[in-house]
Image 1 (cartoon, rainbow, N blue to C red):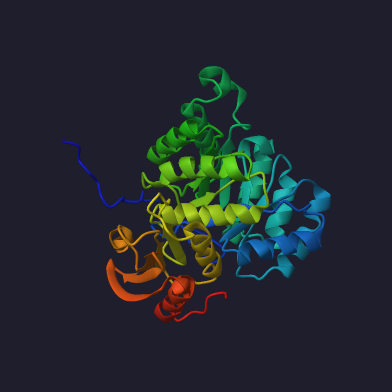
Image 2: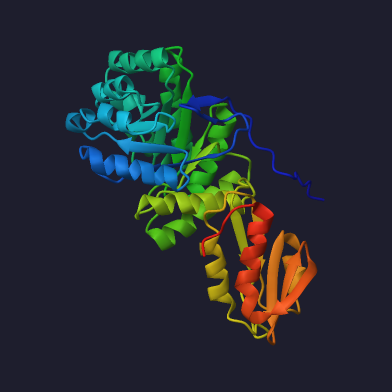
Length: 365
């Protein structure tokens, strides 16, 4: 008989502080995203940072391409609320990492191996240590060392895990352990097993994602499959959905992944039947309207929108509140029990009224 381990036990990892956000150690899984604005354009970058936070992002990262971008970091940091963590993404140029740290960024993302000479890595590590700023080691499909590619091939999880630990040891040799790790692949199976392997090799928090996942539609599905599978094994302390789309969508999809994995409990979760020949109401637009008009609700509530009175009460049993209807009649259901009957034309209004009453928050009308 198969031994079931339920509920899922999250991997035990050390706690890392990114500004006022704590990751690892069982703290809530943080959502990350990355700006697409040119960092040299302060106005556009700050606007996008704030939009991402307003959408529910916990940590925002910006790329620092060159020294022109580096010169803008201090102003960007000053114009974003101090409680909102900012991460600088650095490649190759160690001075840009130093500039980001000096500007007050709360985390940097580098690969020590591509920073160059050991003394450069030591300079960055020393500065991060003095400010208690964590460093994320980010291994992905495009950054694997040549020797590991020759040894294992491009999609072998061992190459990702070994590459990450090689970078980790560079920092550990400098007595630096304020580390976050990611081992992202665009191949979902490679990413899955890379994270399983690295999780056994250390206790650092893991940043989970599927790199270069694709466009909004296909990338959302691919990320949901890959990230969701990893999270369901208890691995993951922070996530990013990487989409070729407006990064606001990354936050929305990430929130839905966490909700679907029962790892996030704030906000409205709308469940709806897929409809069939028994459905006698225009249910799909109704479900979409309920989802849209309750997106601002912060309270945790599961809402069911069901298409028929035959299976509606039973199917809605897992929800806090729901509706079902047909033949001109409608039902309001709580915890699987019918609590009210009314005219079908009042379906949307009745459910929204009940959501307001249960949460104490106003829905969008």
